[in-house]
Length: 245
Image 1 (cartoon, rainbow, N blue to C red):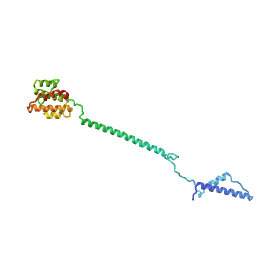
Image 2 (image 1 turned 30 degrees about the horizontal axis):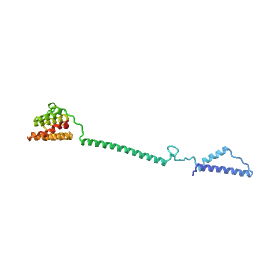
Image 3 (image 1 turned 45 degrees about the horizontal axis):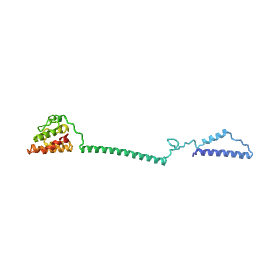
Image 4 (image 1 turned 120 degrees about the vertical axis):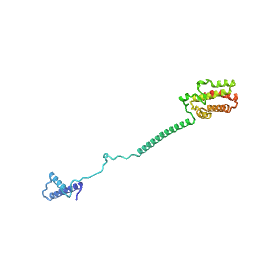
């Protein structure tokens, strides 16, 4: 049987008190009494320590915090609330930024779609092949072969009674402007229907409408051989510059 250190000390104190009491009793009875010396007391303590019933040195264990002897304090409710508020504020600002980015992307896509749908592309630059084009359906479309003011020249022919020549000049001039000024690809053997499909969407509404009326009158006069009055050609002479530049 082993005892804890405090129990051993209590036992030794009790023994020492009992010895002192016995010494007083002997002294009271008239017998000789000698007080124990310090050496005798130390020897008695050592004998008590060596007693197997009192046990030897013992080890004890206790838990402690790894970071130190002081236990960390839990977060206060106010600090936790403030941290949560900051977290949700950050999430809100990040979401707003993402929404702005998505809005800009949607606006860019919409702008490209409107640009293409409305046909607002810049006029295509004529290629070297188009610049070298000299004829379409046996009609000379070289800019050098045409007068500077095509509408006025056609009006002069019309006034002189050359209605078909005036109409031919207008059609040649229109093809030349479409190819060499507006960069529209028209095949050398293109028919009138193919010409109309080529200019559609490449010229503005005024230019497309002018081409349509000119082609109709050209086919009516040249292919059908029907007589054409000057009053039908005169508006085309006057509107040439406004429609095709």
